[in-house]
Image (tube, rainbow, N blue to C red; front, side, top):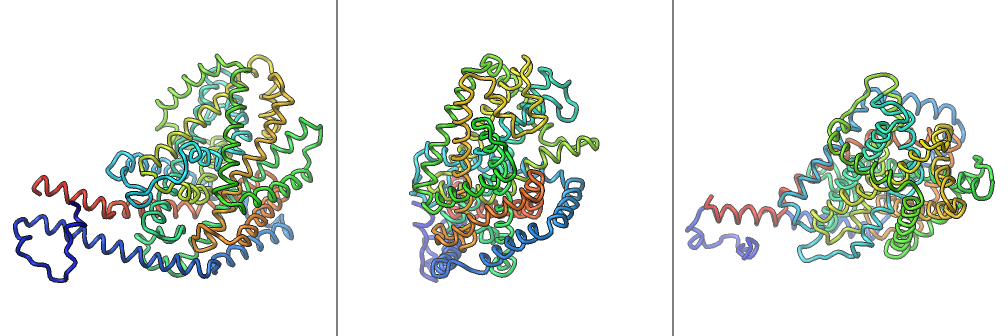
Length: 560
């Protein structure tokens, strides 16, 4: 019998039977009060959710749209002034606050591991009897496709190859086996546990808040345990607007990368020059595709596109492994994973010691961590949406461990194959140094069936971007619709169009550098929100009535 079963609802219960043991009434009172408080809070949040259903578009939507339109107009009318401001701000951020991009992701890893290993791991994202809505394969496919898409091609060869040519922090001699291992280590750092821990904390917080507490899928409502009633006023609205802006700029960076990769692929396949005009056209076409997919809903378009793209990535990975230097890749994987595990703490907290190191960190580790932070709301809310019914332990394993392992494999297969072929005389390193966008296709040109593989890759990039961008458009629409998981179609269409417009103006403003700067700058204030979100989640879990009951039960057994 649970503590809830023992609770007597009358205002003045008979003290006689309860006088046998003093600890039991205290435990019952604590659990009962907590349950009552949870019920009251859930009722209040439910009223908010009902209000959201009646009037889903509020001031957050209008202010966010106004900001984005103003930004687009500024970039179109006076690109030089906007570019100067962004460059100045970036210099200040990287020199004074770069260390934050190392500490926060590592703290997220520690937090998730603690949640999974503790009694919290048994809690479900939903009621105690809720079960997952998607199969494990479909769930993992959507998790991976939401993030891995464009990055797999944009950086799968480019990052390891860049680090191989110029080892980070001068830790190895260039173009040596030691440099190859170091290249894998830093690629794992940028795309592994840190990135997924950021997404995991955000997704867990939102999933717990929405599925277990019945609140709207808003960042502001999850911060209630820390900010109290402030989340109901302008503070809460400001937080939600900031979340939308950070999410938008994180996605525009990915859209710009995707356009560059598709442009290079079209150049390889059809001999068409990858001009800026072509990239703008590609962005326009992609915008139509992912907006249409988002309008079809998570249960249909997003789910099926995710499964297709994951299957295509698996086929391409096996193709490169089998036709490439598979023995070298297998050896490099074992050595790199082992050295990464041994040097994990050192790598996680390695700060620049010179101007050259600072410049390298700004272009790689700082940027990657900021990019993940700017994506955390998009990925986190999407993870919350598809993870209802999972236990916290299942959630952590599926979000932190599985994707990290997949990324380690992918970067080793693609990057390791490119490194070995470059050692044998291929000019992949030179191509990467000249233009990062050409790195992946330079690898494919060294393998059999290169033209067919390039066509396959272009199609995969298109579908990968659609699978991630439609998820992002859905999240933007949900955030600006008071947390509704059923946003109106005009709202979805609006955010799809604005995402494409932002990507185009940033591409015209300064190419990839401008896209990266926008993502990093939007991540700075959002980092504070992620930290507060983690604190709020800890407070929520510690006060969960199921946990309170378990603690009370253990105290009774121990006679405390």
